[in-house]
Length: 276
View 1 (cartoon, one colour):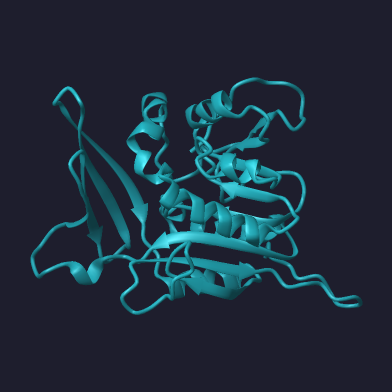
View 2 (cartoon, rainbow, N blue to C red; view 1 turned 60 degrees about the horizontal axis):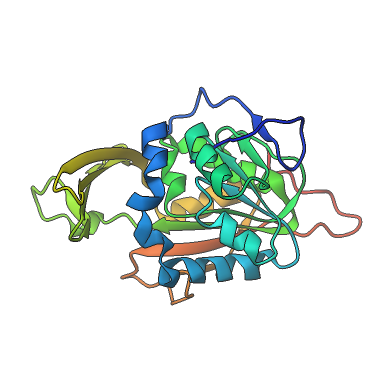
């Protein structure tokens, strides 16, 4: 989810446009992009955002970072403010336009995260807030892991924040499971167990008393399936925790933050290929 403001020749200020026509992802339109930060305000809360930015900054070290699905810059902007050189890839041009209003100097490629490329090598590629699920086929998700590995320098890391599918919370015959119940928002997920396809249903109550409905589609992935995708991309699991605060990942965890690493190339060895 991302967006574009000004156009120049290729430079740090340029958004490159790459084909996104083959992506299975839902495309965020201008209306959704304009209210995205407001509707997602709880994800901007310091207790939510600060641990994520700290974790990612520590993982990036002194190297640059690339965010897949950079959106309006919720994570990228505070990460850049910590001194990390951040670039992004984003499918939605309206989302990029919102990002540009806040920070115009972040380089962004407009395209899908499974195939689009950003010049350079990165010590960190990251994908937050369940966004890997926006790719709704297994093949695209595998391609996303391979694209992450393609952008990583040897020894670099790919980090994903992802929920654990809440399938075991379904009582027999229940068609949906709630993922958020609040004063201004109620959300339910519905699942197709045979295809790993799902839809998130959002009901929002606004200050004028009106209620709006929106839906987004996804393909859910288990942690072990993520590890296999990483293996196919030439990476190995280095660490898995339950959240950005590094709480232990257990059988009862409802989310995970996983770190996969691209092998370090030793002198005299053949480079590892992640694009097969």
